[in-house]
Image (tube, rainbow, N blue to C red; front, side, top):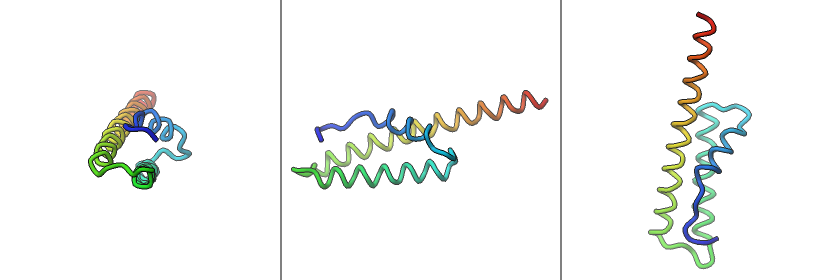
Length: 88
């Protein structure tokens, strides 16, 4: 694995779109698994990443999670609005 790791947003966005049940709970589970996998991969590298590199990657992942979560919530709000308009 090279330094730095990039592309968390597209990976997470795709993974969220492929969830069978795109709920808050399912997304949080996905994010937790991503966090664990990232830390394991970075700490088990050969040579292992430095703590500052690990922190930078962790922050990049967290930013991607925040963005994907905002996109998911905005999409859900759009669906709710369309349904409300159709019912009215």
